[in-house]
Image (tube, rainbow, N blue to C red; front, side, top):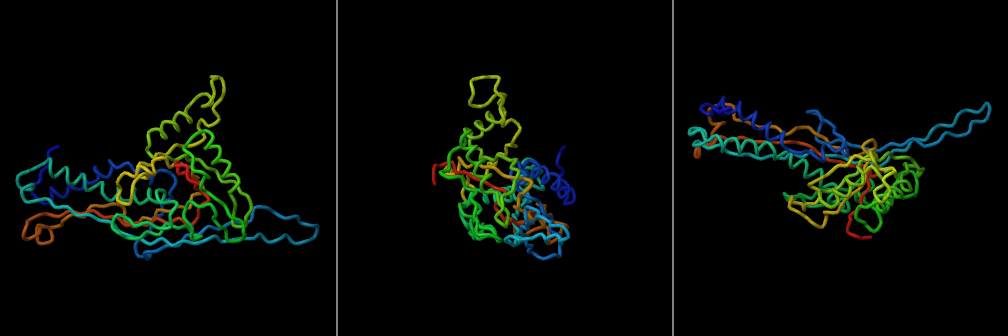
Length: 336
């Protein structure tokens, strides 16, 4: 299809198509991982929303004959407020591109524009794991981002608290081993011993996601481990692999990055488990990535001095995580 850029209406119509083509090319690994719950935030409902965990006690009580049944206890967990932020980027299509039909340049600019807000959303989501051991980080634009959960601790901690008991729990694997059969079993044991409700009672949390960075050695080891027909550490082909089909492997390529999105090899070995069913990580979206186009052949469409025609992209969202019971991590670097 030839791009007709002789008139504004033709250019705008094709720009929408090219923008969507660029947006569709983005691999939204974090957003589609199952680790984050999508919450659509309608217009005119404010720029904040509060989230909290609420637990019912785990067990019923004895009921002596003729006595009234005991009232079940309900305990609200910690709360966390998400605040909408907008990201945006503009780009210019020059007079020469429009007039001389520079198809390749126009297509390249508009398809690239389509990827920018979705990529930024992916980076921000991934950085909740990248900086899981921190309480805040400074993002690529110099803003301080609070990444604590409701108990004011980092997402990954050795001493998370609950509201209705003095008991604490950890979701950071001790000694941060790299992925292996032994370390996976160690993380599963940690989860079993540290899954508690707001009353400090033991509960069962179904972990179904095994997530990693895109480190080739880690990725390949996990794939061999999960897909082997026999036990991964067995020489006997007839031994069943109990992990086959147990977890969905999610690869998060933007976790091993710094605040600017550049490679950070110190985080290459991060891995962990997550529960899609019990996740309390919310991505609140008010404005899906969209294209802003000039509407008329007037002053709103062109810059007077350059005669550029400006297109823009924007998105509005927040990320908030009130609780940490759904998430477990190993840094893979041997730190305690």
